[in-house]
Image (cartoon, rainbow, N blue to C red; front, side, top):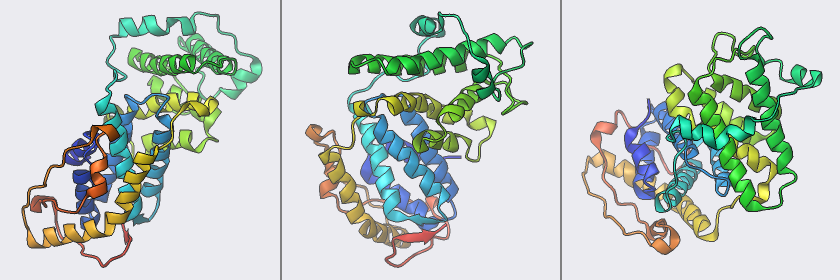
Length: 338
């Protein structure tokens, strides 16, 4: 279960309301798992539209999200920083929307990626041994298909070393992501030793990623988040993680192409760290008094992607009594125990 309210605030790039709502979760404490699931869902949502130029920012967000979930103590400043980074990326998309993965008709999608799988599939005995955990038995109908997918992807990686043109890297990243989308939506039944009771091709793809890229922390963290408290009903909610991970793989070969946080974005991130304790105090007071104060909407400055209003932000938001049960009021500490 995730919080639709918080999800909507973050996806709309609304830093002010996102931070305020996050404070309610942290103060309440008993619903921390809902907050965690919401953050994973946002990571997946970003994965449906992220491109190679912004993937380095998402990689950082993915690692930050995993660290927050793994840590027994929750650092409020880290939560604020993470939420702000998520809002910034969503705001970039909202200002310059692109087509999301998973919506292109399957026929047109096939036309976009068919050339990737046009060559014969030949995998050496060493290669077969390396990927034995995800290759079906030789008598399986998916045996040759699995070899074709593996060899085709490896050809893409080799091709990257020979490409100096950044625009072509953009095209390859999109095509690689489309390949993942196509394989998953075609619902090929691929049996693997990693998950013998489940033939969903998404596990074949995750296995391929883990075999080759587990050493990369940011790549493995995508898989970690996908698997965290996983059940089948969450697949659709988390599928964007593997789409983003495919872009992240291309990034691992061509790291120079992706943007880091610019100075305006860093200023916003730093500002959230400054106001976190004051905002937490404000939320505690609001919850305690059961006040209902409508937030003052501040118009974004389009020159800085609609996010610089946080630089003049002062905590002044409404609370919602229905969202709170037995709030734990704390002193001016930066951490609280889960």
